[in-house]
Image: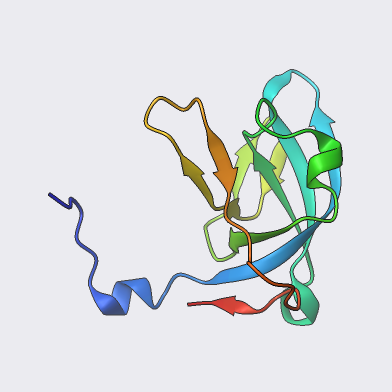
Length: 114
């Protein structure tokens, strides 16, 4: 059974975009979080997000990777850093696997995902 049914007009409010990870930094005192600097294209520009993917991806694996990002999520302060969005990932039930949602082919940063 599907919980939390969303009306189509509510779905249309969510702005998902392709972003490229430009920089990955450790956050002092955060053993699960990275600070990611993203290029979300000309319209949106650069964004910073915090993501709890440290145990699943190395910095080297992430730099240059294109990912799906929820860009109009209300910013949230995490470990003193304003996280300006959220990346999308598939997560196994027991959280033993986390896989980033990425475009299958190369496409420009900032393209809308629908």
